Image (cartoon, helix red, strand yellow):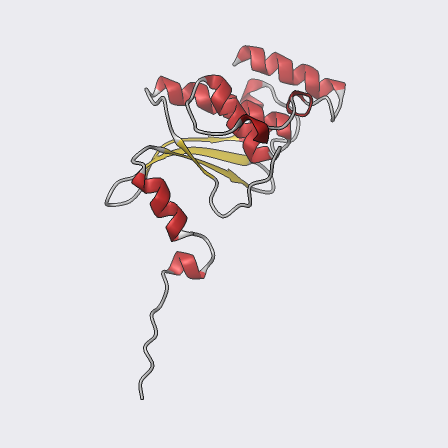
Length: 161
């Protein structure tokens, strides 16, 4: 008696891709705004679907904020917001106005770093379908909860962008 066994896709076995969620995102035929959080930074990518494989149109890492004068951690809430704001301005220059958020397998956490970056993208002018009650408070995004130096640097860089 033979048993029939189907091997799952490698990325599903490794726990890297939820193919049902991905299919739902692709059915909308809009560009995806992929936001990934690592231990040291946040990565924002604009991805367009193609049959031969996804095309990454734009990538920004929060560690690149050092070029703008950000001398603090690249993975705190203010850095995530500034990364989103900077990436949003660059994406709009590429003539992209709307996108759909893709946070991958991360559990959405209200007021988290991913939503701080998303707020920066929305403030830059991108149209992304999202509710207003998930963003962190203005005090946390500006860095008041950390110290005054972070808050001053945040305002300076935000004005520069």
